[in-house]
Image 1 (cartoon, one colour):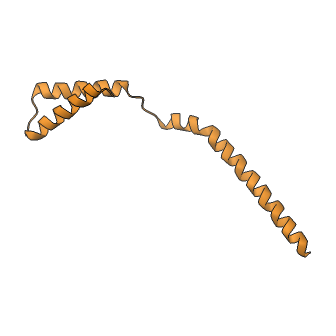
Image 2 (cartoon, rainbow, N blue to C red):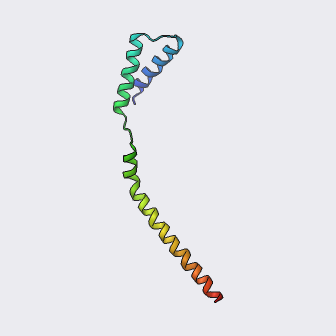
Image 3 (cartoon, rainbow, N blue to C red):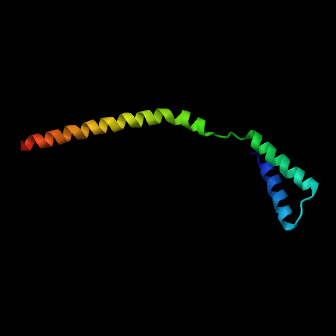
Length: 83
């Protein structure tokens, strides 16, 4: 979002809070600034997050299995000492 757009949003909202009504020009400035800000922003959807996090989940599952195997070996070695 550009600084000019933030300024327009801020001045438009501040002016509308000072008075109980919005004039058409203030409402137009505010809606145009919001429209421009929304068009320029990159929204992340749930699907995007799932795609990006899939490799990390796979690595974590592998690490879980590796830790489980290491713990099982450690328990087996420990119990072998007493048998």
